[in-house]
Length: 154
Image: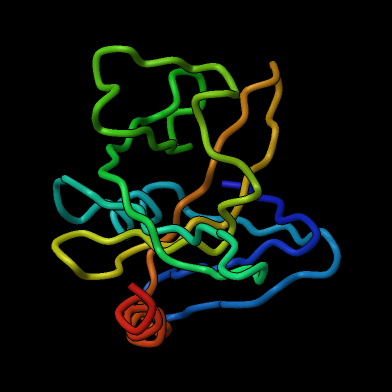
């Protein structure tokens, strides 16, 4: 699988025991073995929870806090090895338009299952036909660091 990561996009790639975690300044191209990638990511059933940063003002100063939402995964109808996620409450109203899928603002967002960080959102790309998608990859090396950050800020 070919995945391009754009400016300020966080890439977390796990193939076997190897991990890459970096913030790219220029576009970078990665190739994945699709069968291995699928096995590495989806090793258990949901439900999943996405935890993201929200900002608000307190006494005129911006403050970050974590918000969470239950989500579910779908395989893209055209691109079989591209996975997207949607709020679990919208299971019966699946919308494949770009509005239904998170974009670059969620880059670096950890995703939890049973309280454990298992993946991180790496950003979005726009493949042919205008479909917007979000790539989600499993973490090993940085899982504890991200979990600690989530726990300290929730």
